[in-house]
Length: 500
Image (cartoon, rainbow, N blue to C red; front, top):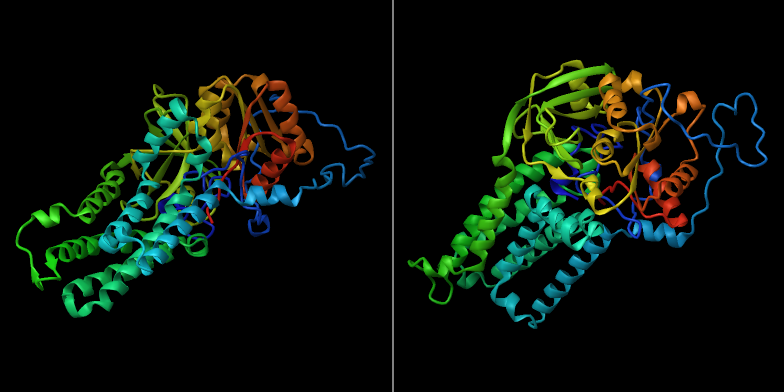
């Protein structure tokens, strides 16, 4: 998903469900997608958020027909579960992400089979290029600069938002395929070890081992349940694998197996496709780290559940940033709230979910490390649409608010309870300063006696506001409910994507 695209948290709970997976990765409802195994995802402790002011507008929904609430039920009515067809469930599950992954993997598998049968001549002569070409593509699909470039093309040209949200499938498919081609290459080298130099074989085996460990460490179970294990292995062993790749490429391309001797001229090496793939891999791996800076930060603690981080300089809407207390470890991604590029500040909402976010409340830092090159989230594509709805729950407001602040054509729906107490006056002030009452619904579940019928809420807002798209930021269960409901109702929506 994700290499670093699934960058959240210091342990299995060190990220808020409303924020997880926003970088990398969203679904559409031709477009809308989300994992349907919602039983695996508990609600965030602050999932329901809070309402910034008692005077904000709310949508008054009527009781279901025939409903006679008792004294206890009147506070939190049970809502009938919407029936969703299996076909819609399958469509929502078989995301563009999965389609990309399956296509890339099967295409490369077919190439490996053809090569093993001697019917793929290019592979016979350029096995290394197929390995590194796949790995380079995997790196590009998680590179901030390259993805920002793709978003510019999509927003102002091709309008292919759904594809951009799911490029994590290409990342995963190419990474796995690159590892598979590397195994094939090493097996081929060992088969012909009689004519191959032992140093080439040794570096090939080392490279293979490191790449496989890096790929395995990014599997979802490891990534979600042992995030620090994933980050250490995927990053540091990945870097070691890149260094070993350079050794493997140089040795492999300078040893002449026909003559059994080393070439002394540089022409053969410089003309090798493998060398230039390795060059560009290295460049795109280094680019985000070149922009790494330690920057001052002011931390506001409105409640024990949330830390509001304030940074200098404004940002355009729809971006996310990675922060850490150290320069190379434990990076976490959060949505960026800003009034615009000319604003003096931008903010991040960090909900307490694990060790890292808890430390922001218990021991607020004076500085943090961040990559100044930010990456694009789904909100960055909001410029493609004339009018839309941004619905979020809890700390999901961190990823949603900038879109509604910076564009008068977006409607905000924030579902929660006790927002002002939990999120504080800064967030409440930004909302009331920039979003007109007729352009927002802040549902306080504590005051309203329960959560709303979200689908009825979305349908009513869709019709009254004249929206053409819905962007959803919630936890896995909330996303699942809304995405399926929107799909069944024919409303185009994008939901948070959890990579598989």
